[in-house]
Image 1 (spheres, rainbow, N blue to C red):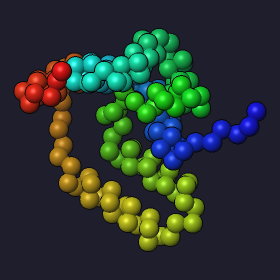
Image 2: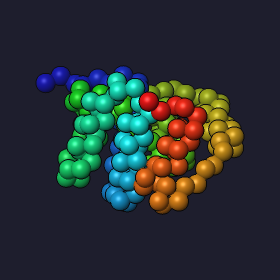
Image 3: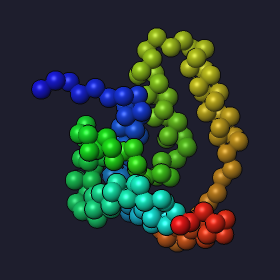
Image 4: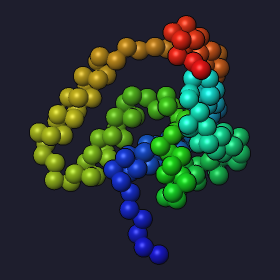
Length: 158
């Protein structure tokens, strides 16, 4: 068989999901709670176009963890498509996400100068400094009720 080639976005999402698998192994209860909350939120606020992916993620999340992990990092077209509609947003910290993005950039641009890499680190610092922090209680994290209530308040639900 020939080598499977990934596009840049596919490579990024694969790298993110490799980090997510590590996080899942460290704290499965938390990562799965976030994913379930995101599934509920997608169904509540989504337009239905991503429902086939949401349903596939839900089936994987409710199944054996080893099958979920395999699907998260597989190079199959089905897994590539699933990763484009991931339900794991919020599972990685900002630092973890930026670490993955920096590594991906360095992997894809081995000739990048220290100046360019320095600008990426500065962008990371600026983004982290300017991003408001919102902390949810474990109950809010598990149910997503707070986010759903805000979405309903602003009329952004179906």
